[in-house]
Image (cartoon, rainbow, N blue to C red; front, side, top):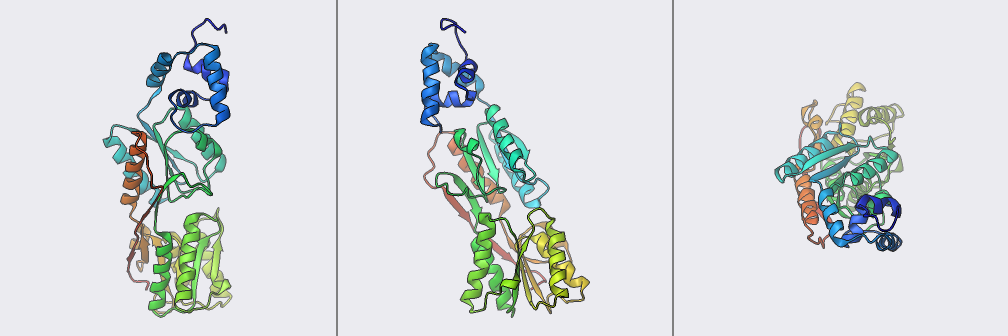
Length: 336
C-alpha cells in the first residue's frame, strides 16, 4: 500500500494490528486502550495521512444499536429471567440484544467477547460466571456492567449485585431462631464473590448467636455437577455417615430441593427434624413439596438497574459509583 492511496479505518486497524473498534476509540479519545496501542495506531494514521473526517465517517458507519449479554447458563432460571428483563428494557430503547451463552467455559467466554467487539456492540452486560473478566474485555473500551460478578482486583468495573452476605446471614439466622443448632451449608467450591459472601453471612450468623462453626457441616459441592444431584448425594452421604445436623442452608434453590429429596428418601421429616432454607427465589422452591423457605433475589430490579446504568454509560455519562447492592427478602414457606 502506498502512502498516497486513501486508506479506510479497516486498513488502519490491519496495519496497526488492532481491531476497528480500538482504532475508533484512539481516534475519538474514548474508552480504554494502552499507551503502546495509542502510539502504534497514531503512527499508522500519520504515515498514511488518515484524516479526522474520514475517521468520523467510518465510526458513524460502524456504530450499532446492539447490546451483548454474556450469560454462563441460559437454562438457569435466575439468569434467564434476568436476560428476559434486559432484552425487554433495551428493545424499548431501540436496541437489539445478542445473547451469548458460555456454558461456564472460559475459552468460550473469551471468544464471545471478541465476537461482540467485532460486531461493534454499544455495550455489554456480563452475568455471573467466572471470577474475572478476560484481559481482552478490559482493553475493548466498550461499556460493560456486571451482574452478580465482581471482577477480581478491579475497582473501576461497574457491577450490580444482590446483598448475598445479608441473605446468607438471614437464612442462617432464620434456622437458628427456629431452634436449629447444627446447621449444614451446601455451597459451590468455586471462589466467586457470590459464594464467598453467602458463606461469610452463614459464618457470622453462627458467631453472632454463639454457635460453634463445625467444619464437617461446611459441605462444598463440585463446580461441574448438577446442583440438585450433587446436593442430594451429599446429604444422603451425611445421613448415612450419621453426621448430626438439624438445619440446612443451601445456597441456591435446586441445592435446597436436592437436600429435601435426600431427607425424604431417608425418612427424615422436614421441617420437624431438619429445617431447610434455599436461596434465589426460583420456581422450584415454590412448587416442590413441601415448598421451600428461600432468600429471594429481585431479578427484575437487578436487570433494570444494570440496564439503566449501561445506557447512561453508552450515552457518555460518567458513572462515579461502581458498586450497587440490592436488598434481598426472606420468603417463608413450609421447610422452616
